[in-house]
Length: 571
Image (cartoon, rainbow, N blue to C red):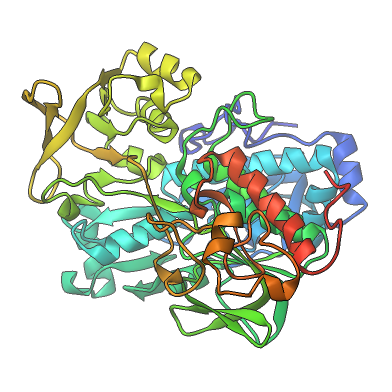
């Protein structure tokens, strides 16, 4: 039989074989036979739509015979083919496992037969069978990456100078949602879309999906509902564990807590993955010798947490923490509340702003605090500058060098290895497109609406020079996300959460004596409230450290609940 993945219509199929991304594996007869024990076969007819962009899909489909075409912008003037699948291929992408709406449409081209497995059953198979699970998960992660790079999914139409446009773009990017930004000022498509929908420029930003769904300046929660992300729906019940923040520490707590039987809820203000989720590649994380992106690490952890029954809600912006009738209650920006007998604070930290006049006006239009594919595509073929001397800066430099002809790394000190791992230092210094500027600081940003260049200064000689950089990426230290905790657990002078003996010294007099014990190692000045990861005072700012603290916090929570041993004996 003809392999429909390579013919016909080759000019319309951008992701041709060979499958360089590992996104389109062909299942073996043995794998199909295994999956068939968990699903049912059914015939499909040419022209039948198996799932449609913008709508949830409840089944995992394997093509047994015939062919299926995958379409973007189905039913619109912009409709085009993404891929044509033949026998042995399976359909869907990461959103299927995460309960999101489909970001493409599957339509039968040649009549045949498919194997259908309910999504809930598929999630269990992915989690329980390491071989078939890894095949599907790897393919789905790669497909999501391809959709993101292609600009599939919904469109955000708005001005680059609009704070709401920047908010929506950040939310979509941080949640790794396939979308395309239509720039009101420079994109030729913008005027046609405004006419088509009867919208004036003043009414933007708008989100458009499938020509029939349009949101005018939606909140992050409204956009999340459109996509199918689990938005806040808290009830009056009090769970065992409430985790605030879903970076590596929070997700580790979710996996270990839920796997050990704790009723676990995780909330995050923006997206899963935290600051690590914006890292293009983490090469020194144990068990991944070829490296792993922060986004993939986060997506895998989310699926793992869901496997054990943890509930993950985004966006939910915590604004207050208070003790209430023997448990803790967290209030969110929309007025909703969630309660837990124990709380783990894993809100992490954000990169600091550079103290340069006028830099705020360029944030999102040339000044960035993350280096993902979205930002890289924005400045493709332009020279860029990265400020920072840590691992995040080094990872960003190497990633951006794949897109930009010249990347300047601006470092305040003279020793690149002072805060950056040696493997990164070696790669940065060897890269032909990277120029390291030591003992250098940014003094001025040039440009009123977009970044046209930088003025930097040698901090030894005070000599200044101009850099032709059209984007500036900042990775300069961390500011803890603890403003909402004022009046709650004790903080250090920089705003990080105190734990252990330091927290005990700041606690309300008698609180520990009345319990007949001291403050546990990751416990805050509030009994039963723990801190893990970057938000904790004195923590090691590394992904592996955050994961370890997240797991350790669960062991300590068991101790708090009076369950000695807790996680002992588990891996």
